[in-house]
Length: 220
Image (cartoon, rainbow, N blue to C red):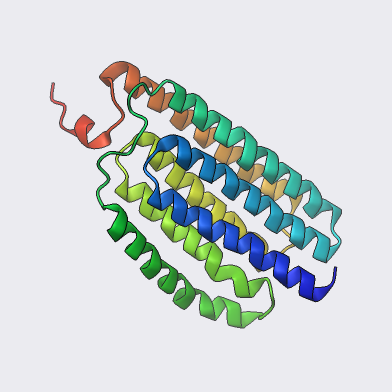
């Protein structure tokens, strides 16, 4: 692949990762957040595909297809199934941090990610490693979603955003991540999503809601 085209496609994929993270932080409708998460899975698969084309690696192409199926297909499907039984709880109505403050926090987290990533980038400067701060930003925004949202499904999306960011950093750091390693990580994430989906359903059946702040107020 031509180096200029490679850099442009890499920037486009990383831009998609960053944009979808901010959108997930901005929107409160759970259905929209799930669609944004699916788009981020697509952007991540494009990122791996670009690296596969640049490295001319069949193994990375297989991983790119696996990422597309799992993170843009299977996981969003599981989230939509969990949302389908949510009744009226289809919106994050009372996040701990409002939208304006959340977007400001995203800007701060982006600066922090770029600052802490510079030593890693300087170890082996390249087009791929220059994009590591984007992956770190996705990790930090995912963690921010995880700790500031009250609905269990929103927190699950935050956890999955973090995993997407960690995966992106791993591939940008070294494109030679083994197929078996990525398969193991993906299966772990799938298992965690399944377990959390079951727990969310049980919480709703037992307590009638998945707002964790309200559940903490329950007394025997």
